[in-house]
Image (cartoon, rainbow, N blue to C red; front, side, top):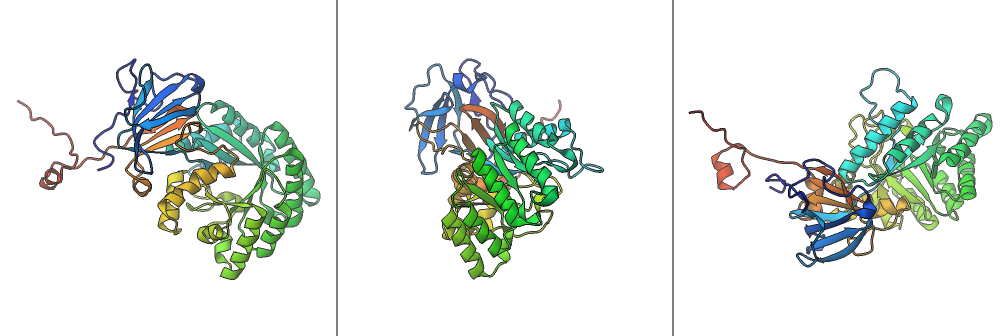
Length: 430
């Protein structure tokens, strides 16, 4: 079995034993001071290598045993597949973990900060070293949720990169004037992305014009919620967004799957020509659209048209999905098992494509690239997406999370015959 026997992958030459926890005891606190050697890691091309990390980057990749191990902290990755870390392009940290609560959801700043922090740490444990969180602003809560998420971002520094998308409800008409002013204030506070849901505004075109104008003014990317079931609206968005840099992303676009094939294909071609990215949510809907049960965006059709498609997790145990896991590898698994993508393409949608959609540097397991890595126990991408139990997460060259799973079987004839890992036997008394 790939996850047995129990593993102790962390080892420090200074301490001579494993860390005994999830955060690599014996390792320096800051990424800049860390020099770490990963040994015996398998890559997707089948090679087994050692990887040296330092200064938050990959310093060297060599054949197993070829890199000097003197005075380095070491992590034994024998039996693990080493991958560029996934990123989470579509989270809702302000509403996460509220599905089981009694009564209305609290938006007190300390509660929002706690939820956003805990959600980001859960996603980090799954492997996402960068998270983009969509945060509602306006109404009775004003900018309180945004300030709370920004405080969570500061508290997570060194563990994970958390960025905030300001999501106003209305931007047009009399009611929209306050929303536009609040959106400007959110950007000044530190929201790095401008979002929203034009589908819910009485004037969707006016909403788009306001968002894109403000984004151009401040040099911010745009990340919008839309069902994508209106080809005309998508066409207008594409024509308006084509010249915006650093770019526009939309999602979850499940409504594209309900359109006639020719209409969906034309819309996909328009999005591709404008450089608009799509973030799908294979695990289910999010609460922002106030709808449930939507289909996943037609990923193969979009990719065939040249649209850059990433995958996010969406709701994490909130009203949009009360059992959401926030696991990028589950999103990739669903794209491979139900979306028709190859395993490698599915993983790329939650790693390279997700990082690109978030404006993050490219990661490869090669010298010179950022040390944002995920080691998963398994032999290849397909096996990892099928049984992604044990994981080691590296952010800025430092181990920041570990999940270890052990599977054992009862002591039986078949377990002995197949050499399966077996439960410890209880010694009988004297």
